[in-house]
Amino acid sequence: MPAFTAQAPAKIILFGEHAVVYGRPAIAVPVTALQTRAIVRADPHASHGQVHLLAPAVQLDAWLDELEPNHPLRRVVELTAQELGAAYIPACQITIQSTIPVASGLGSGAAVSVAVIRALAAYLGRALPDETVSAIAYEVEKIHHGTPSGVDNTVIALRKAVFFARGQPIQPLRVGRPFLLLIADSGIPSPTALTVGEVRSAWQQNPTHYEALFDQIAAIVVQARSLIENGSSDHLGDLMNRNQTLLRELGVSSPELERLIHAALRAGALGAKLSGGGRGGNIIALVSEVNAPVVAQSLEEAGAKGVIRTTVQ
Ligand code: MEV
Image (cartoon, rainbow, N blue to C red; front, side, top):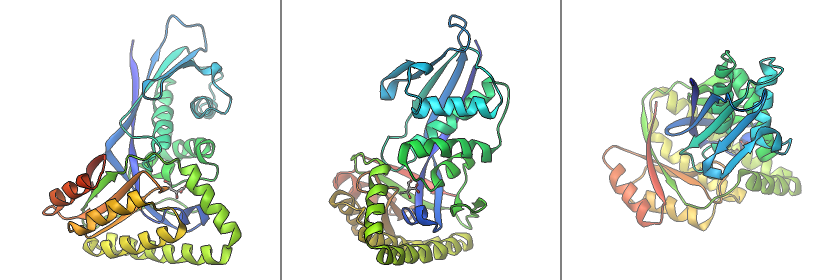
């Protein structure tokens, strides 16, 4: 039985998380060391239109129509079929495997959606353009966390670094010179919906203060974009530290994330910040080839549950 397989990478936000929800720009890049894979196989034993979903990592083993109408996997399958004009889906099994930790700011939800959309489209005999894949995944992101900016589905569907601003055409980001980051996992799950909701309540109570913080973050994102495009990535560290100061002021850091950030800086990282929703999840640190091993060791000693190297290019 032929299998139709598609993969989608994780992502990190280099600059601009949270402010991006309020119309400011952000820079995000794919992380190919972590991947979600969706495999669709025809199921000759099932009756017509029956779709069997298997996601062992989250103990899911169910028929599509057994899931709540708003279940993200049910929605992604139905929206993809609708987009392709398929009145029904020939009986099949969809298996989802992933090395992207969930609720850790790495875009696991969007990666599952993108992988399933592409594998299912291939099974149904069509390929969808990146923009359509991203638009379907965005609809599912709304189920995951209410008011997503759209940055996660965009960078994961495009598999390229992006300068993203809500409602504006997608702008791929040219990286003048590749640079190296370490991604360190605090091991603390933190659903994005939670921190996004908390920032929203705080913003509602004091819009002037929060709008000013978002503007300061936006100015950092714009400076970072020109440094990245000009190949001056060595100077990004200072901007990462300043972005982290503002994220702390937004209230989305935590003692565990601060411990990892300080461990990275103490060991010689050029800059470090949380990435994604915050509170738990991952931090990123800008390093050179030379100091990467020392910084990685310092992060592990400070309690990181895993450290991944990624080259932004
Ligand atoms: C999540 O990866 C980034 C946030 O800015 C939320 C969003 O953009 O939807 C925290």
